[in-house]
Length: 159
Ligand code: ADP
Image 1 (cartoon, helix red, strand yellow):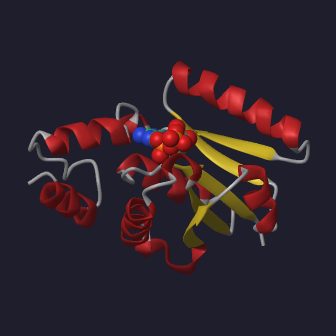
Image 2 (cartoon, protein in one colour; image 1 turned 120 degrees about the horizontal axis):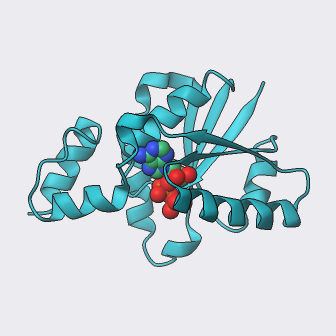
């Protein structure tokens, strides 16, 4: 079974993320979406909410996708998942610079790690979780960018 770990903040998951997962399933049997906890030490409930929203948004893929959080080093989590593959999406050259730095760092920690970098679908190249959060916080409609359950959650949270 070919497994890939897709790490990120997913704050919140967008249709750009979902598109990367869908296309990765052409290459892998299973995608493990992994939400890092280290940056949010004090907000376990927020991480739980992100996990829950990811599970709703990715439910259409059934058992081929699982959503988990992880503590500690990504490379250790990847090994625990019995794989060496890390999936990331690329939108811009800025993404590439960032990813390349992370990639080199992680390969330095574990030379066995292999990265799969998928270019964004052009229709989602402008889409980021940050922009979605901003629009929702200002009362805007984000239903074109996220799963309906995510849009509803953001709408409620902004009131
Ligand atoms: P992080 O904080 O780790 O960058 P994100 O949740 O913002 O986490 O992104 C996770 C991954 O998904 C990153 O590789 C990012 O480049 C990718 N990604 C985010 N938005 C899009 C999009 N619209 N299209 C393709 N890939 C995306």
